[in-house]
Length: 120
Image (cartoon, helix red, strand yellow):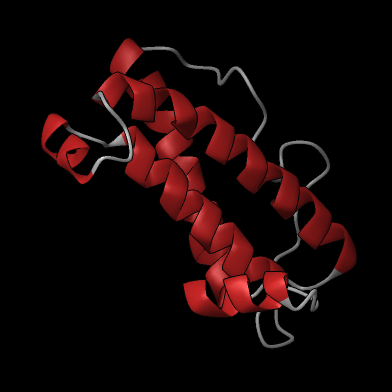
């Protein structure tokens, strides 16, 4: 899937929103859960540096979800990405005891109709 998204980008083809949603959510999850041992890979020097990027990835995911639900049906990959993104964005709330998110998630601003294989 990652290879397909990069191929579509390089060839300026129409991208599948569901695949993009899932990948962005995976990036959010990875950066949120980054540990000291992961820093050996050289991408981030500290876990906090990686953790700070999680909210950016969540915001990017939300933007693609917003566009996708206005222009197309969301695929099963998109549904998986929405769920993963929601989980990653609510973990800090659970840890701090907050009850209200600071930013809206998919569907909280007008609803999202997820259609998989033509069925709601």
